Length: 509
Image (cartoon, rainbow, N blue to C red; front, side, top):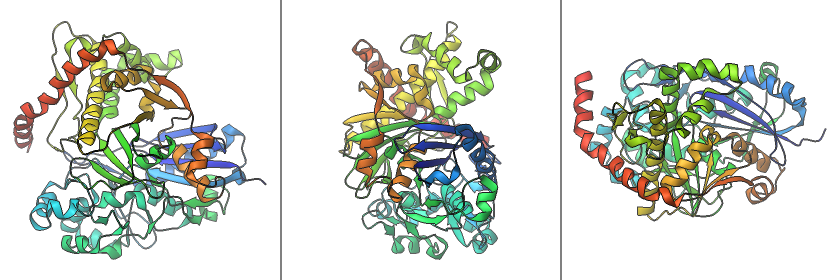
């Protein structure tokens, strides 16, 4: 049988998504399943890794049934995931505790210890990035201090995609794209930085070996095949973090190429031929060898819209199934009914602290400018504009470090909203391009699997063959002055509220 199908799987923050493609990048079928996030204490965020596997077992048979496709036709499987995650497993690959997610902010005390005993410059000059609870090292230190038995029993510390890869093919590994998210990675030499890990007191023997993203690390086992409907012996690659997969999906091959991905968060990724070794933004390794990614990332931009849907969008939730649409489609229609600037309402999307460029666990969401004239549509539009302002804040920070945007694509769940895409184009005053299959990560996973298994000779060939711009949103010059003025208010709000955020956090404690 000719193996011409490619499977991309993404372990997202809110759901697992799987997409089946042909070699030309056409979507044959797709399926997803949500799973819960548990918040045991303020700023904590955990998921049971077993839920990711149960979701995969539930949707993969649906995927092939929907497409009428034979699983034996799959040339390769790529898996990406929310990152970084902390998934300690024992020698059998069983998770020892719930995963600490990337948005978990419990490790502030460990960050203070790292600043005092290792130093911000020592880490940034080798790994890149800021000492922050977002990264793996502080979370790992928290586990060592608060759950020493878990730390002692840990055979390997996996990422979200690494856990699913182990379930599929028994491999224990971490792809190279995740390296800088540890804070003890040598971003120039693409290997663990032993001196940094030593100064942190972490045992690198517990870290999995690093593999290239487009490298076959195993094949689907008989047990995994029986559970998922996949064909035994199907190649599985090391995969990548979700942001890197989005960069591959958008065809980022040249410095200055950029993509924006909105799901739970909004992530801006800029292709570079050198590693980012600063502190304001996030460093990543690209899935394309010889390239890196400079990343600006919010925490809860898409999550804010989801919060609005769940808490204040009852009408949309009830109407959506009757109309045969998604509740988010109805919220987008609401946003379109509000003018540019949301009638003077500005939203700070700091609903679970914030990452770049402010890096503050105490920051919280704010609607600013409410009046008795404010309508529901204004609130929805303000959420979308707040995410766009945060995106611009990160783009300007990157430009200040020499990483300018030449071209910008948009993928992920947020790309489904034409209103939101236009807002982003108007706020940034750059064209927003939508690739033909803007899945957010699964197409990037599939393309890397195709490169690894010889379906494509190179990433360059894969991009030429598959990645096409389907639609472009041009910025409206008439809205520039309005958004420029509101953006200045937006960037001034956080400094004005910083101490109030801290006082609120202290009061909660």
